[in-house]
Image (tube, rainbow, N blue to C red):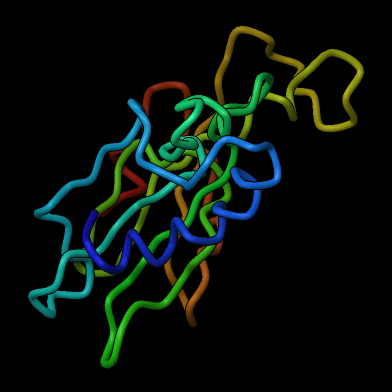
Length: 153
């Protein structure tokens, strides 16, 4: 694992050891985009989720049952290391020009029947466009059913 990713993964080491499953390791869900450089500094930035890791004794030990990858973290390179930025769901698309904008799907658990956040359109999976501002992602708008293209300009 790249050093920044290995450092991120150590937060789950205690959970693996508490379950008696050894050290944290990359799981079959692990994927990184080596070409992702959102701030143009020449260093790779990373989109990471807990479900991308597992334990040596069980690769799926950190994958939730109802929401396998509900929230994530953007490791954004900066002078002296990486800044951790919360991702409020699964990133479907991310772009850096002219500003960092991402199309994000919220966790499906928020749409379960009887949940106070349930969407009345059960067959529609909402996606939202977020923009990185002042070190956090702010929601700009919900994408129309036709897609998010117009909101990414």
